[in-house]
Each structure stands twice: as structure tokens, then as C-alpha cells.
Amino acid sequence: MRAETQNIVAEIEKSLELLRQRMGWETVQHRLEEFNARVEDPTLWDDPAKAQKLMRERQALVDALATHDEIKQELADNTGLIELGEMEDDAEVISEAESALKVLAKRAAAKELEALLDGEADANDTFLEINAGAGGTESCDWASMLARMYVRWAEKRGYTVELQSESAGDEAGIKSAAYKISGHNAYGWLKSESGVHRLVRISPFDSAAKRHTSFCSVWVYPVVDDNIEIEVNPADIRIDTYRSSGAGGQHVNTTDSAVRITHHPTGIVVTSSEKSQHQNRDIAMKALKSRLYQMELDRRNAAINAAHDAKGDAGWGSQIRSYVLQPYQMVKDLRTNVETSDTKGVLDGDLDQFMAATLAMNVSGKSRAEAQGEG
Image (cartoon, rainbow, N blue to C red; front, side):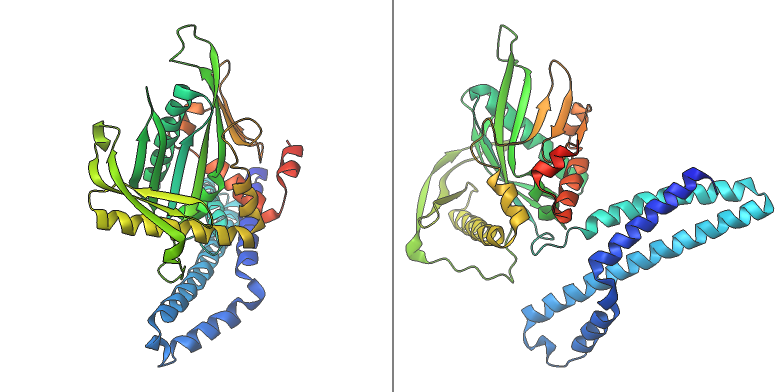
């Protein structure tokens, strides 16, 4: 077997090992038997919410086990074909099997990353907020560029994107925007994007063509599952209605029924600007509950807490990623040191490499400083 092929086989075996670790390989069969026994319990559906949760957990384990076994079998089949081809000096068989292994390696790597998304809310839909920071018009334009980047990323994954609210910039771009992004593992992938994003470029708004540095903050938090109970004391909130107008173009939106909810104990403010006041109240309340749930997750999950602490003010000293368009082109994640010169691709939504690296770093337990020290 050629050295290149041996390396590919080693990569696949490494992915299989990680899949086994994430499943808890030593107890996986025992847990599956327990799930199957509980499914046979005739009283299971007396509590539909509990039953649905159990069925989802069982299916997730079944799917993970099936994925592992399929990859393992394909690996054995193709390495066996290569050995057979070498014995019979059949170059065509060897070539086909090697090509199949390359495809399998990519699939195994993708499944390896998905296996890291096992947090309590990782599978949920997500809210994503973008706010322009220091930099005036330039930052508002940067906010609109980030909004486009995330919408492109979500659409490439087949996710559904809903604009919840938007505030136009005074001259260009947007001051803020909030989206709901729906799809399997939407929160798990996007949670690593929380923080401040820094742009360096020659400003199109500067007649002197000088370089400008702009900042925007991004905040990601999960849509609360119907099965997760979050209690909000009516005495703790204030609900205001007001007139709201959108940014024009495809986002034309004028209404007298926009809703703003303020949660006094935490200072959280959420808004919604749909056409129906009833709909706005429902959307805003769900967003508030999601924010409160995120606060609870932050207290229990140090890795996510560190990411959200990095959000801070949208200015120097709190960036997670730098996007340099002039005098050279480079996007660099300051937590993992992952970088690329393909700035156009990134701004068109090619973000997976950054998300994957941060996800792997969080699982490995490395700190931000340790990750930077390895660069």
C-alpha cells in the first residue's frame, strides 16, 4: 500500500476512534439495550414530552452507531480491495479503491466534527445578532457584510433564515440585525461565532482612500426547545409597542405594532418587527426565554461562557477574528490561529474551517492563550 494511502487510512481510523470516544464505546450496547427496553414500556407515552425526548436520544445513539459501523466496513472493504489488487497486480482495482478511500476520509472527517456537537442545545435552531461597533458608517457597512456572510453560510447548509429585526445605518449598512436560523445543529455550529469581528480595509466612504479599522459584535444563542421550561415572572418585564420601519429594498417593513420586551433583572432587551402585534409578542418572548436559557448554559458551560465573555464592547482588545482586505488579504481567527487568504470565500460564507477549529479546541479543553501559543 502506498504511503499516501496509508496516511488516508490512518486519518479514517483516527476519525473512527473519536466517534467511539464521543459515543462512550464501552457502554454503548448497554445503553442501547436500556433504551430499547424503555421503548417497550406501555406507559412511556403517558408523558409525551418525556417519550419524545427519549426517542430522540435513542435515535441519536442508533444513528451514531450505524455511522461508525458503515465507515468501519467501507474502510475494511476498500483496504481489502487494495490488498487483492496488489496481489493480482490489478492497477484499476487499486485506483478505484484508493479513490473510494479519499471520499470516505472526507465523510469520516465530517462525521467526526458532527460528533463534537453534543452539547445540551447544540442541535437547536439559533438566534444570531449583529451590532455595529466603533467606526461609524464604516462599521455599519461592515455589519451588513457580516449579515450577508452568515446568511450565505446558512443557505449553503440548507438552513432557513428569518430576519427578526433590523436597524438601518444613518448613511449606509445597518446598525444592527437579528436573525433566526433554523436547521439541525444550527446553534452548535454558530455558537463559536460569538464575539467581536474586526475589519481592516481602505474605506469606500473615505475620499482620501485611507485604511480604516471597524468592529462589529456577533452574539449567538439557542432557540429554546418546547421541552425546556423557562419561567418568566410578568412583574420582571416591560412590554412596549412602537412604530418601526425597515431598511427598504427587500426588507421593507413598516408597522405600528413592533414589540420591545425589557427584562429588568438582567437588562436583556429583545425586539420583533413583524406585521402582527400578537406575532411580535410571541417572537420577542421566545427570544427572551432563549436569552435567559443561554445565561443558564453559560453558567454551566465554561467553554461557551468564555466565548461570550469575549463579546464585550465592539472595539480593540475583544476580537475573536480579524479580516484584513488591505494592504494584504487575510482572515485569521485569534483563538485558534486558523487563517486563510481567501477573503472573498470567507465573506461569501465559507466559515466551516473556523467553526470546526474552535469546536475542536473547546472539546480538547485548550485555552485561547494555549491555542494562540501553538501558532
